[in-house]
Image (cartoon, one colour):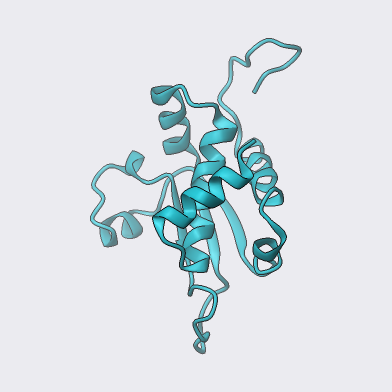
Amino acid sequence: MPTNGQPSRFAPTAQEIETLALEALSRLPEPFRAHLFNVALFIEEFAAADVLAEMDINDPFGLTGLYSGRPVGQEAQSGDLPPSIYLFRRPLLDEWVETGVALADLITHVVVHEVGHHFGLSDLDMHVLEDMVAS
């Protein structure tokens, strides 16, 4: 992250990624924000091996984010964990370097995509929502 106008020589920390994700969430329109109060946000280095295997993803850099939980409107079942959004720091940083997209924009894109899963949105709806919260 830039400091005094100079780029940092260190990769952004999980805490810095979380700050950017929370900023993206704060820009969501109110009807969406009101339904995110119980959604947990986690920043991890990579997705767990069992998650990657379940999704048939062989490369741990192949998953930047994940929504876990039932979409809004589906009845919760006994034993359900709270809905959660996971961002995977190392794959995000890899994509950031490879694409040259601003890190805040990349994180916003992934966060909105995962929020879209929480609401059961289509890909088109997710793109519209992303345009609404673009930094």
